[in-house]
Length: 283
Image 1 (cartoon, one colour):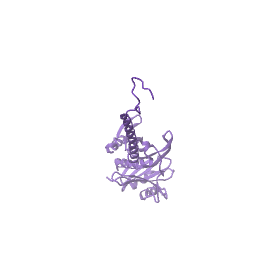
Image 2 (image 1 turned 90 degrees about the vertical axis):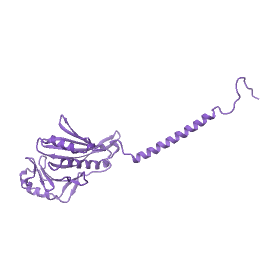
Image 3 (image 1 turned 180 degrees about the vertical axis):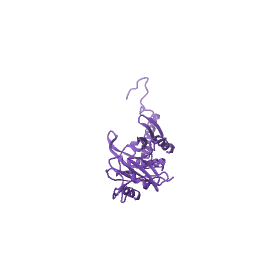
Image 4 (image 1 turned 135 degrees about the vertical axis):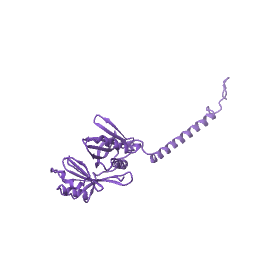
């Protein structure tokens, strides 16, 4: 028989009160339920929510945004200037994160116009771009520069590339590379505008031209077909009979004119003469 010391109650079983045991069980249940809810919300978010940073969107996902942005630029430039779309340029090897590499996709539009019209063109294009893009032209040490946000972290820029030349670029920034891009698409024939321009310059038409395509705001497509036409010197004045008064640019190194729906451009500023015919967006 055990002794009971005066002033102490005899033991009655568990030292934890029943209320505390019930509270501990409820806390465990709530913790498990919260963990299950978080897991379910995470699973749903991963599969339905759009990415919130550029590094989560791949080159393949950004490419349609780039194509539409180029189409917007073409529509904003309009038919009064000589322009040519540039092919895709993909630079690989950039760092998406410290441990993963990616690629940067860039496309653009080169515009030739009368010297002195560079800033007015940048202003006009900025005004014509969609309001959500927040397009604007600012002065910098290198001259006026247009900047706009085409959405999905795609940057649009415009700058003066030289007297009478403006270059617009649309760039994705470094992203995971999930698709391969070719320089541009081959066409089986040069097309009538390029063919007659090459004949007028005494340059034989090549057996294939190249094409760059962009989607217009109205759902149609803009095209640029171009071909290299040799490195020998040539007088671009031979194209004057084809212009029929619709001359857009007339300098010793560049000549551009309208031919039906096309803008035909002969550019001799590079190592090789380049001929291009571009069809813009309706309206």
